[in-house]
Length: 418
Image 1: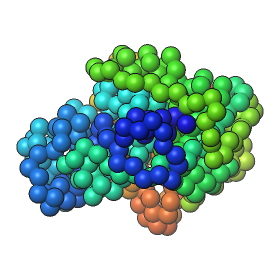
Image 2: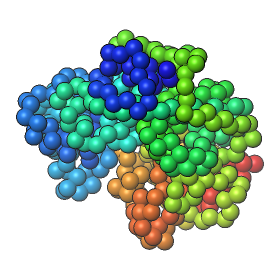
Image 3: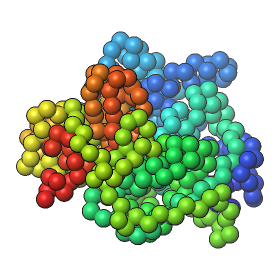
Image 4: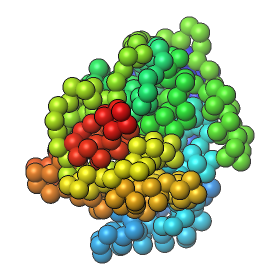
């Protein structure tokens, strides 16, 4: 069996499972946010049970429209807050948490071998720690909150093997953009992606979170890394409970094995209006920008801010560009403050916002007008994703984003640093 099949088998009391089988799976963690939780809460009440199956295994994080941007978002947040407090759930108020997919691993709430389901498509982020994590609809989440289990179909696994050593300024975002550009936005439809090979294994945990986060942009059910020493060190420094590490069998059957040689890979950029419309930064051309966003559940971690600070230190954001930097959690914000990065960003002419999804989904703090162009470290660039349907969103890693903020156009870090 593959790694994913091993985890699912362990959570349904069977020795073996195969792709295509329907299972009733015990879950270790159920997640929802301020957009998706209200629907789940209404459906939970319709089921007719009084209490969630285990309040310590249900997590609610308001992060999409907070701090509240209008009356409607305030009402959503109020409903979620009241339910979380009534049920005694794991809950993070504004000022205590941050973006859910940055926050949960940081707080040790997800661990290797877990099954995690969330009412958010980017729940697949937690595959970076060797968990099977996937997004589901709010009604499925309601059922899981009530019963502690969920039905699902066992996905086939595509193994992605990354050979070689990554060059300067190339990281997890570039690997996953390159992959999506190769296989397409439906290239892994209802499959699990297993990331392996020496280049993937060399990534930091932050880089792995970025790759697992965007598995969904290839249509995948989940993205997952095998647990190694880096994973163990990360989890043990944060976790407070035991966990079980699974390994794929030597003769595991994969639906596909796709190999990449990434030694000469450049930083990648996804052009409108698809994460699969990918080119090396040197082939993008002269694309002038109105806005740059550095943050999100994809690239709002401390390593991403360090890369941006390294490029922006002692330089100025182009006068025609709005550069918006959003740390992924309160802890990331505090770490950036301690490391004196916040001052670097402000002196460069960037604005630093509170931890929130904000502009990623066209929510607030960076909505685009018609005709505007934004380069963002977020995960999607569909038509209208960040505001007007007549705007354009380009995707990159933090290095290209910071360099582009300085140049006023999409640019490589080498153009800024020489």
